[in-house]
Length: 319
Image 1 (cartoon, rainbow, N blue to C red):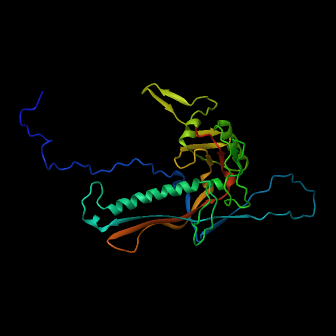
Image 2 (image 1 turned 90 degrees about the vertical axis):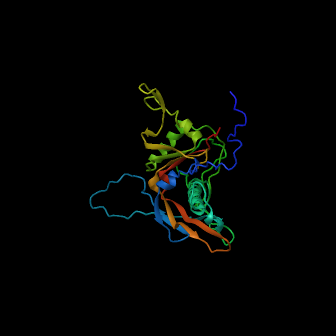
Image 3 (image 1 turned 45 degrees about the horizontal axis):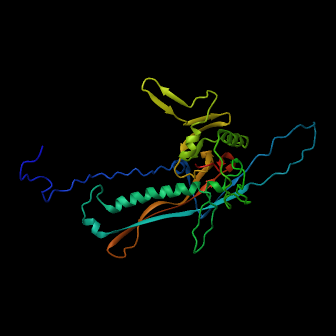
């Protein structure tokens, strides 16, 4: 079929109003499961400290009647610490924005501040998992918190076995882990770390790992040798490993976008917390012209109460 002659169609019309949806679609990941799950405490100094202790090993303990009592030697607590890190972002919007009619948001400043607050939480999550030693900072260098990688040393499977080394400093947090040769992540390595955590008194409850390593974990088998199942009624194939039960404890797997793909962290969440020196605050900065500047700032650090309660399968192949 063809149009009648001289049809004045929509391609000829001038002045058709735009049809722009009033919704902004954003699928960027914003989850911060580790940071969000940790207890928050108050820091009152840029160097936040805590103490750890341990019971002596069990020993034979039998004495004769009337025996004189001799005090045994005692060991002092260990004093640890981590530096607070300043996370800061800002946005500048010209004041012309006040007169504009925009789709999807009433005020550009409010929209952008909300975005950078979410982005800053992702930065914090990334820092908490980083294999980064703490830095005291100076007038010309930023303070940096030590991430998980700088604390894990008691329950680590260096599955590559070549070149890798746990943090070696006398004080946890002041040296990073040295990466080694990468080899495939296996169920045997995972179970070995779980056992080591249990032997050291820990009760791990969470596993954080990349999507690549999660795909391998989906192949873990139990005594029922079953990982995938088909639901006959709705014909769905279910392949899931939400919870993994071992003699050494039960853990929940959480695929994580901010964990280095070579690392699989097995964590007792109760043994970590975040010490906050300055909670997240949205502040308007001094006006310098025909614009408005707002800053979002957070200052905090990671507290590893006792790293023996958690572990790491390190140097996992990523392809």
